[in-house]
Image (cartoon, rainbow, N blue to C red; front, side, top):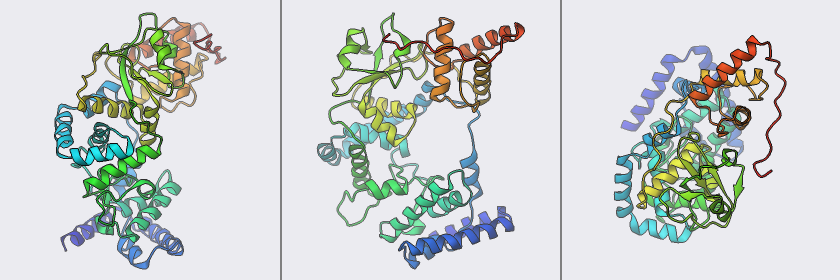
Length: 418
């Protein structure tokens, strides 16, 4: 009864902020969607339970459209996620769930510290599962979102999960974007990879730790996880290192990196790996350096953020008894979105093709920064540090005064091996 009251309260709250014309448009859309879902075999009972009385959630639309005003540096991102609490609590949970995690590791090849690291970063070990009703959130995004077709398909999958008896509609809660359970699976991920880890005949990613851990491991294994290989390791670079080589797309066998003078930060031997490895500088040449392996690409399939993947690796490293980062004092501060747009515009006007002026640090902007840095004999790390913006602004002003802002493209530099 209390759950029904809560749901009715959410519905009434949404009605109070959404205008009548928007509600009528949503109602028409929802009626058509119900017909489509029914034609695809979803039961009337599920459609009634999940969709009756729902309204667009204005807060979900706001979150979908929100763009960050400021970017986080890697170290800011890491320090907010790899915390003393998560290391301590993660260690306790490793012990409490040792039998389960050992069995999962043996079956799937995914280290228990890695699984617990995902658990910590996704939901703070189950403390933050999300409280928004998934069908209502997904319906909102499918009706009024930037990726309506994507969220429409996610809503259909959420209804199929309910129809299969894994969870009741009123209990299917999660994030504003539809992620749910301890590991924050999207509905399509649930249907493709979730596993009944405790053998009770249904998959409960909200209340069953075995279901959550086995499902996470199953996803990683099927995404290409390599047993007995790391995700990333902090490394020390030689003084004469060519920073153009620090790129996700530039990969060498570990033994070649060793021959170039790359060492682990703690002076232990570099890990062996079947595939090639790359060097990443997530906060520029003055920040920490990481060697990343094939399992890094697997983590990136889970979340397409370099900072996230490195945080998973670092938390797992420390949960397994490894040390904290040795480099913790790189150049402070990150460019705001507006500053990054200004940097892109200035680079474009000076002939360095940074691509669209969108305030996003994509590969084209990074490439333009590297070319600029090489021309001015700066460390070519591709990182938009505040000092780089100041340098570009000075050179841009000089070029403008001399009438040289032609926009003609500057030639790219050669491959590091050439």
